[in-house]
Image (cartoon, rainbow, N blue to C red; front, side, top):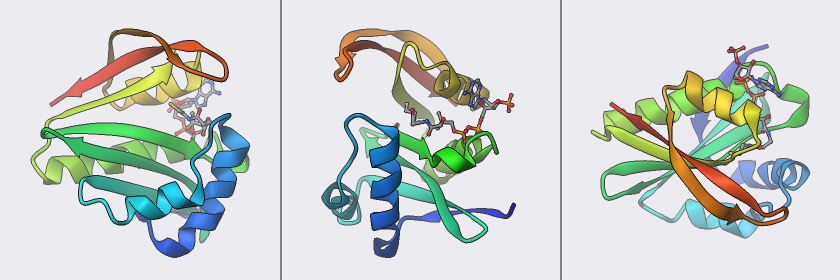
Length: 146
Ligand SMILES: CC(C)(COP(=O)(O)OP(=O)(O)OC[C@H]1O[C@@H](n2cnc3c(N)ncnc32)[C@H](O)[C@@H]1OP(=O)(O)O)[C@@H](O)C(=O)NCCC(=O)NCCS
């Protein structure tokens, strides 16, 4: 399988919104993705597997830190290292802009995602109680400091 990572473009959005709907209880809408394309502090990458959209990951640059969110991989492509590749490309992109600190939140029960982030060098830095809805759950706050 040939995996490529590149920046989000308008023509990716409908497919990404489908992957979101199938993956999250509170999915991002097509409008949310479209708005990203207009925000100068937002960076958004998509992964293509053999030319087909397979996943995405985003980052907001806030006060010189990279705040990573919305990491998602289409069900049929999971387990192929795509999330790992997306996070590592986002970090490389941030580092190329001089960003040294990255953070994210993840559901405390989400072992797969926590594993992906740990591999990328993130460590736990505390819990934000009842951060998530649908279902309500605490968030683990993770940081990666250069
Ligand atoms: C979490 C998610 C993004 C992982 O994507 P992925 O492309 O399958 O992950 P990768 O293939 O890059 O896996 C990276 C590492 O995590 C491990 N991993 C992935 N899924 C796992 C699972 N279900 N259980 C245990 N470990 C898992 C892999 O084994 C790999 O570790 P390794 O290199 O030591 O083998 C994907 O499952 C997903 O989109 N889930 C739904 C959306 C979501 O919950 N996103 C996270 C929000 S914070």
